[in-house]
Length: 330
Image (cartoon, rainbow, N blue to C red):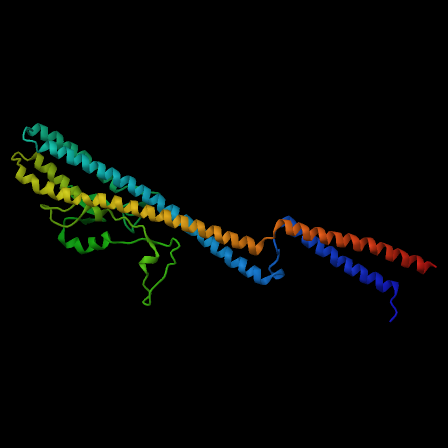
């Protein structure tokens, strides 16, 4: 087969263009640091990268959820601490009130102090975090605690002293707000959520304030303060009449401290989840770098080698084509 100058020239140009394309491709790798620009260049690695990026975006959602829950719990702890401090002030006030040296005027001053403390407690019970009532349970729009015409406490419109409301209040006290924080949320065979795979951020105020009892014998902290206040104003004041309310108040206010402790435990658990999620993000990012990105030094070496080959081919081609043209002229 006779190889003509034209055939040599065409083949040389074709190979030179291929070399130039490869050099530009490697140059792009150096500039971008990526192993591939299009998925078609390395489908297997592209699929791996897609899955890793999807997992990483999920960890970013977990990170946002953790920070939101953390802020919410901080708001809850702040307001619960204020309620607890007010409860201690109630305790200090009624201790003065039951002192045998107090007269009616002295006890009236203390009763007014208790009224002010009730207002402060009610304000804290209806505190908001962003668009949600902190102690409102699952209903973030309805104000949780209100008063009826007699000054008795209502939760979600239900009288906390009415025995007929106990079942409904039981449900409200045990409402849950489950958030996925990366624990691998799962469901059982009946389609019910496995609660150990989610984080419950609910905070129903009626649970620590108490409910049940009757108007005359309340179990709720707010109404118990009201009863203590009324007894201090009673012209026939006696220790025997006020003592049952004080005893129930002392017992129920322990629940406020229990909930503050519970928030502390949840906050510590959030710290663990945050660290766990950050470690997961670090590992995913490391894998993604391995799949998608070139080693910079290796990329530069490969480019320089291809550049050298291209320049060598270009130089050799110039000599070959020049000689062939001269030979042709002869």
